[in-house]
Image (cartoon, rainbow, N blue to C red):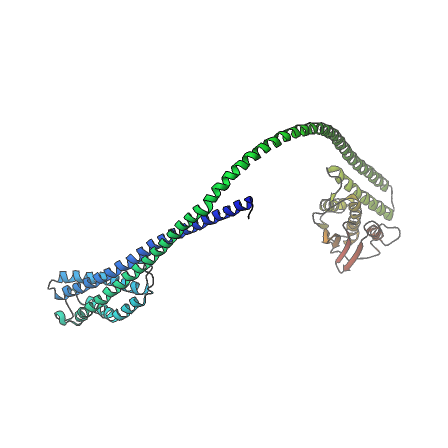
Length: 477
């Protein structure tokens, strides 16, 4: 025996299944009715067109007789016009009834008896059509022969009775087939209707009647459950009141913690703001101090007569200016943690020629830098390297009145790898000129910076009228 919940589920499933079956059968019945109406319409069109074909055949035969026997040219011309007009319709309907015609709404014929009759009437149809076409070729008011002895008219008159007899049989077959299809559809419709009525009766007896008893039993259970629910509700309300008191106490404690956290956040914001201002001030003072050192070097250099000493002072001044420029950019930004190297290198190669008294048109600089930003720990060594390499180009690449082009590039060449490339089309690499002597701050300084501070590598490629120095290092350790 099934328990009560399972019985209810079983009855519900049966009820829903019956409803779905009834709905499906109703839809099927509706579709069959629509199909029946559509089939009736199609069959009626075919029967009407076959009857019209018979009438057109008689009209064409009659018009041919009147045309050949009329002594009035105007009347003969009218009958000829009727033949010319209706012959096209007669020919099209004949082909449509046999092979189908979407324009006339005629489907392709699939009945063997109809196909047999059309095959049998085809010689008479062609003979009549040929005779009518020959009549149309005659001059208005004239004939190709005399009366019924005319060959075109003779062909028409001889073929017309057989054609009409076969068309009558064809029309009968069309009507018979249409009646059979309609009867079949109506039979299916009746079967579906009876099946729906049977389902409704079975549903009423096996589902609705047991369901009413279960509903009555369930009503008493619902009443008892309502009483228990009311008791549970009263107990729940008491529990909720106690819980609300606890939540009020917890909320008060949380409000105190939130207020304390807000005070701590305000303190951290002020401390962070003060720290940022302090960092800005440090960069500002470092920049000012470096500029003071550079100014002192420039003042001292005025008293130096030895060209080598004077060059050393200028190199030192340029190095200090490159470092000062980094601190100046950090001071000018809200974010004091990174330097945009493209902006920095552009400004650097713009200042260096003036520091060495070189006309801007002597060396045409091109700066190509990706949107890469570095922190001071990487930016300062890169600035010193770029400054020294650019200084070497200014001092040695174009001696005398020579001029040319120089490029400085800064870009990512791989994952976590950066490159600085300085190149020119000057006289080429000459070691005795660019800083291998013990008292110079040239390639020896660059080599140490690359190795000690950037943990990188340096390559020198030189040829005739070309020098390229490439420094490669990791963006982050």
